[in-house]
Image 1 (tube, rainbow, N blue to C red):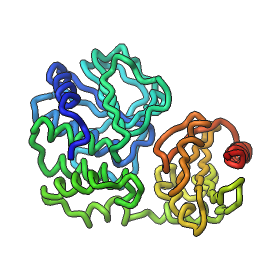
Image 2: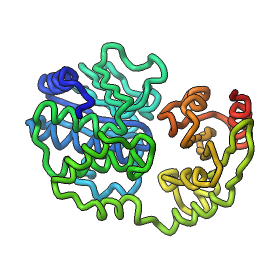
Image 3: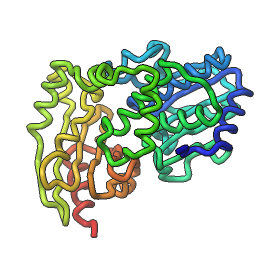
Length: 328
């Protein structure tokens, strides 16, 4: 069953039809959904005759996504000098999620596609905002719009969209996995995708350095009773990254180890950043951690959210635990 109505799909492709130059970007530290959705869109737009389609991200992504077709067409920059007829922004519930400053006056039209609940009224009112929190990924939204408009896809598009769904559902394990996820995935698999190959590329091939980083991070694991919740947390410091020759990209899925501790209600991952901030990730299988993230000017999903807070690890950790302790 479609989640995206046909009126929205027609608006989306109507704007695309009017646009000759198209810019695509996503959130900072792009993940599988951002990358897969961007590449799928580029493929589709090229097939329908759009010759100028640029994907630009601020930061590089994990090497495990390098197997995706045309991934080398993604460029990296912290500023955009060109003007475009259209900008398509993926997975950004507010402008700050983009990761770099955009001069929106450089775009004649802007389309925002997201599956996160918008936290504040910071998305442009004159944009076409395609926001469906019921969807587990942007890839699903894009697939629905392609189906609505009866736009033919191929194996490359199917692969990119499938990767978006797999990664944003945690290999179909998270609570956002539903019948629409499985129905969409089943349709994509008809294009001859090798699911084991995809799993192996994304999840089954880790560098020795990243395993050593995981070992160091797990040494920090603590479990505490905080208010009415059992909270587990882990920490990654800049020194750990330096000692293991790794980056933040190597910490993907680390928080799942903290959440897997029996009896834990809330898992937290504190990651030190060189700029003096602390990146915080929250996970739960029963508590709405999005409310905690919102208090820290962050956002995300009900059971998977995050925020970035200025300060050192000790003070930020104490601040977060103190707030959780006050939750009634």
